[in-house]
Image (tube, rainbow, N blue to C red; front, side, top):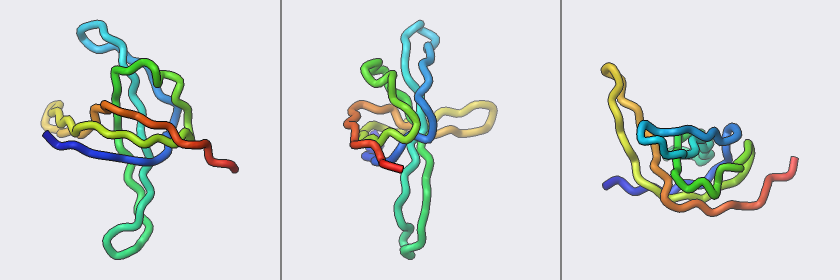
Amino acid sequence: MLTVTLSGILEDDCVIKTDKNDHKYIRFRVVCDEPDFKGKPSVTIVRCYCYNMKYADLKKDDIVFLSGSFKFTQFGGKIEADVYVKDIALGNKLEK
């Protein structure tokens, strides 16, 4: 199992989807901003999904702290990586 812990902000509002077994889940992307190994700014966008509908109202720019596991799937020769979110904690909104 590949376990990951992330913190960042939502790139867009989360979207409610339904899987092939008719279970609802949310999908969203988290923008993680952290310097790379040379100290230069680096941004990574991570695709996430979660079956806990308690978080279905997550909006763009919400700050999240989450943990989960990497899931890799292959579609027509293309490999996609997602994080299956198991735990989420919300941070305070950024003021603009």
